Length: 280
Image (cartoon, rainbow, N blue to C red; front, side):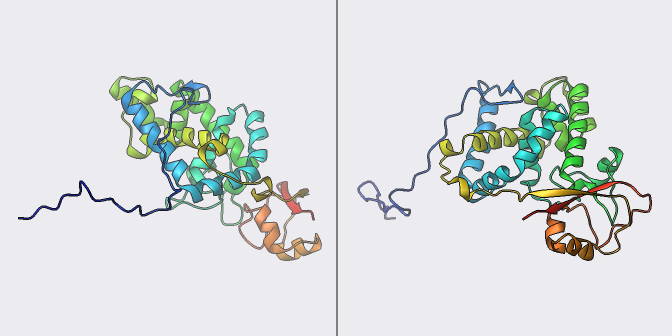
């Protein structure tokens, strides 16, 4: 058998001469809501490194998240402060939905990805006509209530974040069975094993984008158009007509009020709704 030696063969580079993939140095200060990641542990360091690499070198996704964060963080930040939730939890919303109002394959909806049962349990109106999981103000309040209860039950913000993914009962049961009290000591489902690390990686990259190679100008980022709020406690028989009466279109009104799910607002109970109207 002939064996060809590659010792003296110069391999041709398949990428641009300027293209390099650099290993990342992990900051010793990585934390979630002030709770530090124990990077001195080899398994923890490897898991943290994985999520940071994925969220650094998935460049198109990272840049889109940066653009959307500029659009939605100014709304989320004061709401989190108002409802007593650490600012870091805005990155949980990024991890959940990428700041897009889409419905997951499991049926979780809105920026905070609530399931119907959980949303209704916490007082959100969810039906074919109105779905308040898509209302950023109301769903953020519910997310804060859920996470604060989880923290009270489980003892840390890190475990509260894990419970947002796996449920309070699921996390509490595994902690009890394994006789541990820390997220970093527990063996959890695969998705939950990555979940908190992903949130922390997103926090690190989105907080220090230029350190991770993201280059952009301020006018490259997305912004939210200005709106005015109209209070409505009656039936709206035709939202397209309603929008036209306020000098806008059905499409633009729905973009600012995705919780309106049909071309009407039934409102049999005469509830007070706040509808955002885009202002040029």
